[in-house]
Length: 524
Image (cartoon, rainbow, N blue to C red):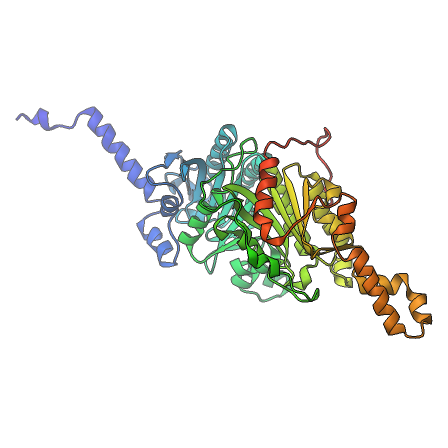
């Protein structure tokens, strides 16, 4: 064999160059930095995509992009991909677009080209009607690029805003995210955080100490538990990176690809006409005694499976996703075990946001009502319960998806109106025989209406008891509302699942629309 026969051809050289560049891109900021990320208990940007997406479905875009900054010696520091892995793939067979920030490259900081890569996949997601998932692991704007980095963030924020209500947007916070890095996730529909490794804050502990002299740790300021319990910023909390990514896959099982599609229907072996005799005794005889609304939910949904959203925040109201006869639904329910199920500021905002998400993506709403009213007190009033409570009222009234409401026990005062009553366009309103629909509880009402009569009675206690019983007989039941057509049907609790399935089937072709307008002015 001659020497010339052993010389690589031009094509072979080009292929070798391609393979070397690809290998360099996959190493991000270098093997040592990737190993450091793993040592911290986190996965690398590419490992995360391998878990998130169906096997062998990821197609990477812009693998060889590099930054264009020459300030502060940056011209000598270029990495293929520039700190973010972007592309598309599939989750349970469904098309999704993704970006995964690579902390090994300049701490995942955002440059102008980094931002353009993200914007490109967001544009593709919008054009093709598919969800966008961002795996965020970024220290914020790349300081060396100055205003160009800030412009990149603003470009992303605008696209988040334009995509809102058009395609599902999901953000996973998988490392420290500060400054501008937190605003894009806050516009998206759902935020996932990971215990002990992910953080969100506008300004970090060091800046806070300098400006306000407060000493606070990263975990206390912006850790997963803090944002899940106190601020409500995080919708889901995961134990580690893998758990977080699997939770995202599960969430997507309930969602359509875009606002023009219907939610997925999955096969189920759970009979639509299944009865649950346990429901006939779930409401306590004592109207002041709490019970667990979560038990009721799990008894009526398919296979007893309920994906709770905002589990750790405003626990006096429950929101989440489930299925009836294979169809996705959103559930909003008062929780009598916490604050007696009262509506307060946090619960109103939590539920309003969830209702608007479901309405945007054609997910029917099931509302389970046991609400004695709005939480009283100066703290609530001074912090705007009027405005915040109106958000939930607005959200339910605005929603045009099928709306089914079930009153299990108390539905008092303005809270009765707010919780998807017939008067704000609920389609089917059901009630248990234990339902109490009134302006307020019997005792309070009697003390107001018959104050003088009780005061002047020979036996005030006996008179109050008699009047309270009369009031309960008149209003402490669902039948007055049923007489007026505000309740469509009083049902036996054991039949709850069947009645909801029947109503959903009847409403599956519902068409309703709001008046033509640029947009409403929700009381923010």
